[in-house]
Each structure stands twice: as C-alpha cells, then as structure tokens.
Length: 219
Image 1 (cartoon, rainbow, N blue to C red):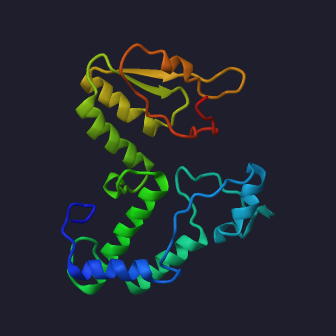
Image 2: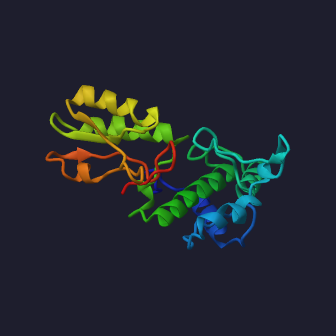
Image 3: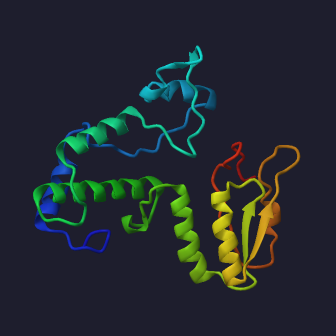
C-alpha cells in the first residue's frame, strides 16, 4: 500500500526504485537539514539561486517581500519542474501506464523526503495542499470541528493574517470554543506565550513559527 492508501503496482514500485537509484540531477531534490548561517549572510548566499532576483527595478536590485502571497522559485525547483513537464507529466495515482507510474513514484518520493525533513513519524502524515491558507482551513474544519468542544480555547495572536483568524472564528462559533488572542511583548514585540501557558482550559494554539506581519517569533 502507498502512503495514500492506494495499492502500488509493480510498475510504480519499479519506477520508485529507479528514481531512488538515479544520480543527482534535475529531477532529484534532497531535503537536507543544514546549519543556518547568520541572517545577514543568508540573503547574499541564496540570492543567486533565484533567477527572478537577477534584475533591477527602479534602478535598484530587486528585493521581493510578497512571499506570503506568491513565493519565488529557486533554480533547482524551476529545473525540476521543467524536467517533469518535459519527460514525465501525467496523472498521479490515476493511471497504470509508464508515465503515470513514474509520476506517482516521484510524488510519493517527494512526500517521503518532506516527512524525513520535518521529522514526521511516517510519510502518510504529510498532506500536500496548494497553499498555507488551504492547509489552515483543512486543519480548522477537519481537526478543529472534530476535536474542539465548548469551553476549549483557540489561541491566536493579535497580529495574525486573516487566513489564520476567520477559520477559527467559524470553528469557535460552531463548537462553542472560545477564541483568545496572544498579545505582543512591549519591549521586544515578540508573541507573549506566558499568558497562553497559564490558560486553565484545554487549548488549540494555531500560531505560525514566524509571525506573518513583521517576523515576530513566540517568546
């Protein structure tokens, strides 16, 4: 059985084995945990990986901040996508021909890599969505509606993007849970998690690792 619960054909398994054994190239990306360099050096070090940044706007090197709406793609991703559409493009989990089996194997191999990178217990815990908003809605309306009860608390921050507010407002209204907000510390403008830790009730805390508006982290 595959990670999706669907049986894997012999052709798919053969394609997976071939993919796993092939040398590093355009269609193979490895998720590796590396030591993060200093923040000041990070931008300079990876800027050349993004071809779209190799231009000037209004006479200055392009600086792109709108990643929450649309993220730019590094060269490795662009090459992998081009290679996929040139050689493999086909339905995933929906066909038994060679290209479909290869596409399915690559899709599940990517899930395995993501699972290993984030430390998931097994690859079936990884669910691909189109964007963060869709992922948040999926968590809110599936897990939230099934597990939150009257008297439970949903704790967000006062500086959340609306995509991490509206779904929880709806869930709170339908389940009877209470929606609370974590404020920012006055000195450092970080999320003050001390108040959240002192809540007397069961709580769901859907906070991002780095806050959307200006990069604050839970303190």
